[in-house]
Amino acid sequence: MKKITTSLVGTILLCLCLMGRQALTAPIITTRCGDGIAQGTEQCDGKDFKGTTCTSLGFSNGNLICQKDCSISRSRCLTDKCQDPKIKATIDDKNACTQDTCDKNTGVVKHTAISVDDGKACTVDKCDPNTGKVTHTEACPAGNTCNANGVCVNKKDVVSVSLGSSSACAVRKDGTVWCWGWNNDGQLGDGTNVNRPFPVQVKGLSDVVMVAAGDDDTCAVLQNGTAWCWGQNNFGQLGDGTTTESLVPVRVLGLDH
Image (cartoon, rainbow, N blue to C red; front, top):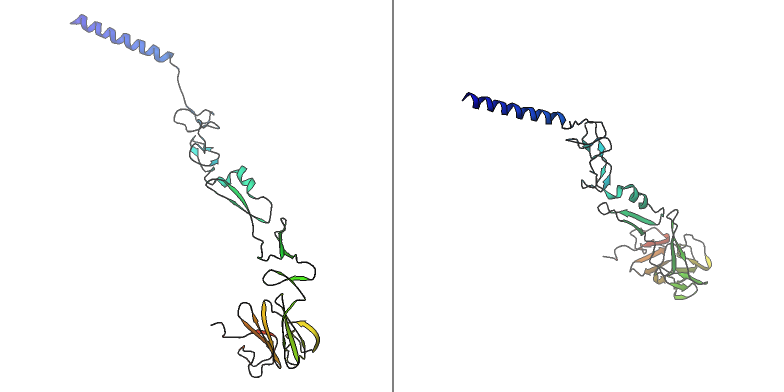
């Protein structure tokens, strides 16, 4: 019994000795935040992020920050792809005539031309890329004009004429009305009481399809179906709800119901 015990004790001592020798010869691994090497439980250390990036963490772009305790901060990671410096630099194309957009999910940049078309076939529509100013230049042949429908018509072509007791009016193809003659009550519609021996354009009217000259007042019908009158109004004949004469056209009320 005494021999067995002694032998067992010796074996245990031998094992402990061998283990101690291995411990002394094995490399000692130490971690220290700030040494520039991310190891152990450190998420990062200096510029060493163990290969982790904003993109690998699911962000569109950006830069990770290694904090003092060697943990990662994602505060500079980008979720909007349009904030990527390379993409952001292409969003504004420096053209005032385009609308610049960027899809934050895909980073796709589009430059869409703004609409400058005024709907008239007789005008040339342009946009200044430096200022964004839109201009509509009439492009009708000499002697023609652009009417309210956007069509080039001969300025001298008369559609109809109406004779009053002391004045007359004509409708031209361009939709304008021209009157001449006696103008004591403003029946010529040019904003004055001056008699005219030659046609003057009635102010404020376009797209006219018919005109009727009376004794001291005149009325016109527009393509949109509205009626407009001007001149004497002592009995309310202008239909604007007053008895005040008008030197320019006023809209007749109550006909569009």
